[in-house]
Image (cartoon, rainbow, N blue to C red):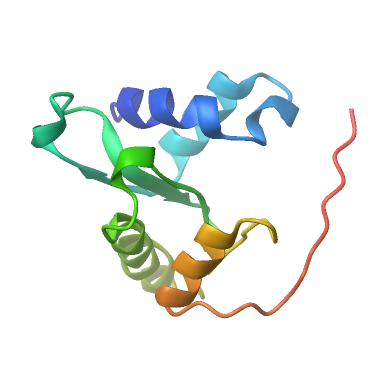
Length: 130
């Protein structure tokens, strides 16, 4: 059992889709983190060594998701490091093409994905129901 406390604690408040999933955000996020490869950037300089500065997970079909970098640490290339690690170590090693999904209005994430070499191929809409 991996210690997911740092990533889970940081991810839960910002993960906008978590509240839409049955079973609750905490259980769902913990399950995703435990069952899928993850990558994160940590720093001892923050005073909180278990708190990630940037993180993401890679689902078993190659989709990199839940990418987030803490507000005060953006623009330093941490998201690119996380994406590269997951793409190389998780998706590509299993013969999968790494993919990701970004909300169309999320300009910073679109810019990060472009800088990391990803190209937009599809525009999708999701509908959530209760």
